[in-house]
Image (spheres, rainbow, N blue to C red):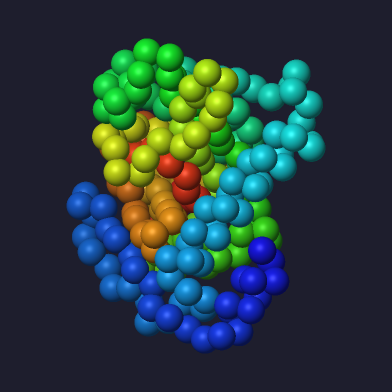
Length: 224
């Protein structure tokens, strides 16, 4: 995969598609992107999935993998793999029944999530897209995460579709990134060439809470 990315980076520049969330004002897409559009971002998500897999399989034993997490006293509603340490907790706050209904899950299916730190060195294309989105808002990039919102069916894991109902997530803002008077938001990079800026929906200065959908993506807290 790494060789194919380097090859694409050498082949030229193409325009990226940036999609703004309706809660923030639109911004202009950057004029060039090294690599491809949809294929590059698809590889970004594959890198994110590999990072999650690598973290859970090699650096943490099964007994040490946290299956739950909380943010500012709010416990996540969905079990999974919660390995993201770059933020002060992660949580899904949408109820399991709402997710089940929103994604048409069968009686033998349940939502399942995976959170891990995003390594910019292993995911340079995700970092590049995040930086462009942040620059459009004159924002500073903070912690970056890989997030997968999926389901378990008879012990088999798969991703939920990215065009499903809204799922609310919350990230705890780490003390070394917290700053009074700043506005916080989250950048999301997904397969298909879409980059979104998701507005903070709560007034808690210690968290950034936002709505997203199922599937895999690279996420980053920004402030401006």
